[in-house]
Length: 397
Image 1 (cartoon, one colour):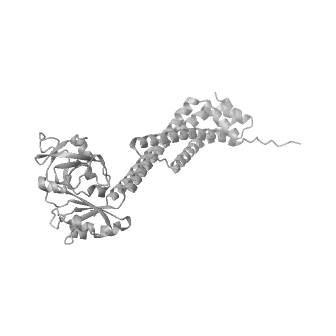
Image 2: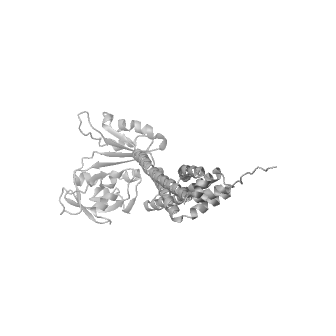
Image 3: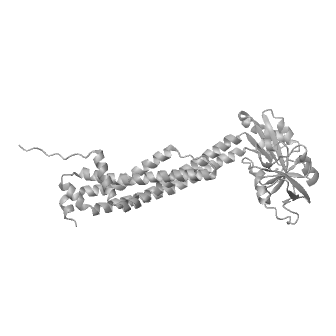
């Protein structure tokens, strides 16, 4: 009576040990192959993490600055000329019931220089603007040094510098002087960056009355900044142009500065997609490296494969061994890539002053992509190893 022989089954732990044994036998090749996977995964994780950190910082800035700021500027007339806002426009805007704060600036036709020795044509891109006392509170910007204009200083030759204007003029202290319109103006303060009004950063701000008295300012505002309650922003936006210029509301351009920040976030998202594509290419190249390593491994280990087949290993067991090696190789590279990508994200975010954010779905997706690459890269070598006849494999030198 003959007993049927059944091949022993390999448990999951057995397959894992066999796979690890195959990798330990070739450490240098394993490290170099895993490096390709690690670079691709690290690139993708870092791109997603840096983008998410930047968006989180942007959202926090929007929450802090608010989305209830509207600006009104003169547009073009029917004849293509630049329109003018009425002198009393800021007061008219204040009469809108939901409005909580109004500030205004007016362009002054003059230049600012560090000294009177510098030619007038060298302006460094700095504008001189008349400013109302309420401007700072409306924009919710703080002074980095010194003080803002008040009812007294707004009548005298004194200025407050925007953050970029101070840097371009080389003035980082209060009490210095700048040359404007043929006379010296004393620097009262320097502002922090105005995220919702970047034009303020590049401006030297003079009191409204002082600009009229010393610089020939005509009193027409060129930009009106207005804040209202969050719930009434759209309603105020609909009536703002008609309130400022009832006769020609079409000549008033109304915008919401926070929309520009949101558009920037959308543009960053598109750029992130491009970088993710590059990371995917790097991951694909890493997968090709893993496949090449596994093919070479099959060729080098034909005697081992033949011996195992002769001792009773089935084709499925041989196939599982090489597939496990490919998955482990990719997993090692993927884990290293996830750690590296997260470290790059945290380091870059801290350097930029952003809150570090690495989405959980990015980490899970990276590991899933690693396993998919490992499976695809190891499938052909594993099937090739399983098809080797024992006699042919043992005869190989």
